[in-house]
Length: 405
Ligand code: ADP
Ligand code: MG
Image: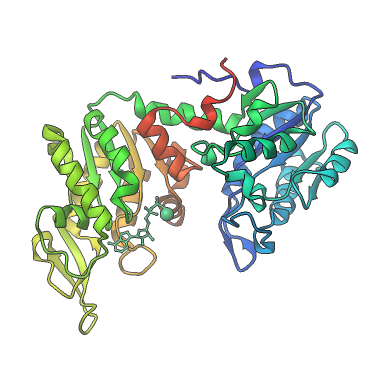
């Protein structure tokens, strides 16, 4: 399936001033960028625009400042990193400027000074509450100001594609053409391969903490896949819904309700849903010893923190034989040793699987990177929530707002 939306390649953009929505929502640690994957992923579109003599105005959000100016969430760090990465890619010093606002006079002045081949990154759009406002009038008024310095709009923020915000959606009312960037095009093409894969050989692996975040994708993909492998704390919600003991394991009431919903509504497809048969659990109410147990032998006072060896082996074997695999969410509390083993077993199997494989979700991508198997994965999505929503609905609302091909 190829994109039904126009991309930068489908329109004459030469020499124009482009407003480009990018996804620079990078993880920060101690005031530094911990992982610049999303900035790297924005380079192909930016390079394409520079090759075509555009003036490139980038906008993005970072974190959740909730309409306040939060200096710790300034995009200036991203401008510095982009300048380094772009200079490296171009083989010459790149002109990347930063302006500490995203609308108004300061931006207009900077934009007026731009030459073809210049890049200007605007400050965090979420420093204005209108960016995410549910009041459409307020949101659109802000979008119009954001659009003011540009002649056309390019959305390359796949990770924000499921959000109808001013910078992802509102601006499409004020600029024309509105097209997708090369990252959005690649993400949609790769994820579409999972959506259109034959049922036989399609394996979906879901983990992480909350069933309610993933219930949509469970219901959408269970009928379409051959097997769905469940791991992580999500599993305990299914256990509890089946009346099994989960002790002090992470298991929120909303997750149990969602698991009950899946069990009650999916009929024969439930035969494809696999749950862990064994676990590693810790005696958190007592001496903190760690013990291996069968899934139906979790005891009160114990916290199940990882899938067990039998489950790891079964899941790995299924993944290795899959023609197409999608994985989202760790198999256990992988930030804490030794509870990273289940997640790493799945990451290793993903790396060794000769089929077409896709990983999405911040924590699962981190696991794949830590295992050193990232290069063996066909597609690593830059969007966690967006990739799940695309697999659930087959569309993303902000991408739908772009021009048709
Ligand atoms: P992703 O970011 O890949 O989409 P989630 O955000 O849904 O994944 O879930 C990741 C979190 O779930 C991690 O912080 C991990 O520690 C936690 N988790 C997974 N399994 C367990 C478990 N058995 N007990 C406690 N926490 C768990
Ligand atoms: Mg997460």
